[in-house]
Length: 419
Image 1 (cartoon, rainbow, N blue to C red):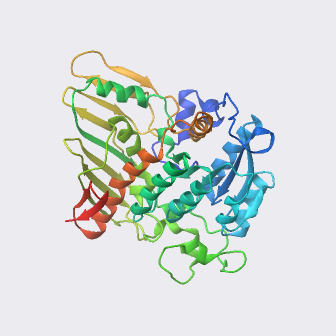
Image 2: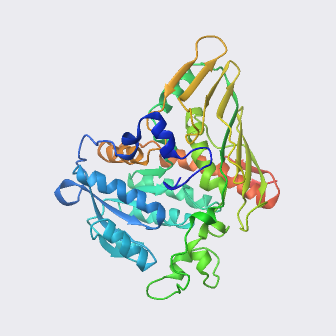
Image 3: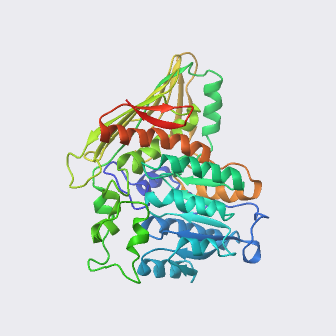
């Protein structure tokens, strides 16, 4: 979720003010140990940024704060649009500039790469980074919706090169999930059989993607062919370039933009594998765009649970995340909602347990987790293994919606089958 995102319910800043934790949320956590594997100046982790649009600004701010702690050093930036590239370089303290990510990955000062480019570039750039020996912070979603084959190759590259991937789903930045997962294993709510989650807001993604230069054209300062990558070759459009989230060629709409946030923690807590079958629906009912403004996905897992993911960009009234078991429920409110105390575990027999939030939604904590893991070589909160399995039902839901068919998962081939 972009740091500027607003809902009518309440903004994240308003929620945190009412909770009395504004300072904690907007100051990055301390990293206790400077990782010994860092190769940057003064034993700092050298960070390179690929894709320096609006979302990358939050990551640059975070890394700049860790720079003050002596942990990181922003050393390189890369973008296909020079004005954006130059602004990012200034924001990092004059980091070296590249317009081709392959050149940035050859920079020996870069130890870790932050990838915040459009969805269709996440997989190829991550694979290249892993093969270059870099650890990676990859913005969500893991891949473009029709690149599941590349998602698997990302995992293979991470395993082969013994590199780490943290996917930027900041709702995973909470210390409670491992505890709740163990509670489920211990039978606190019996057998989980049904789950729901959702993301609701009022507003089109187009309102969030500013066109800074309506007269921008391809040339030395704007590499249109590199922007297109493996996407269909089309004539340049300033709208497509700056507002790429509105087109199927470059984005997946609410499934991979928004539902990935609320579904990933539930997936983690339930300890799920790939789904057996997925149904996707919705449509573009309000806004002038290709991708849907209403999105619903049903994912059925072998022997349960059945998971329902709901979304609307037409109204902010939301739903709790809820895991229903045969002997109780686990639930929590969307982090944007007021009066959200944390995770509630409510067994049919016994007392309710409330675990207050401990980092959920905090991108600084997600970065801290990765920086710590660079030292320990443990897997981060939102690891590549978890992210590949989360990507599957989201991509399957989009394909189901587009094709009006059920999408099944072939466990032998680890691929999708339409039926």
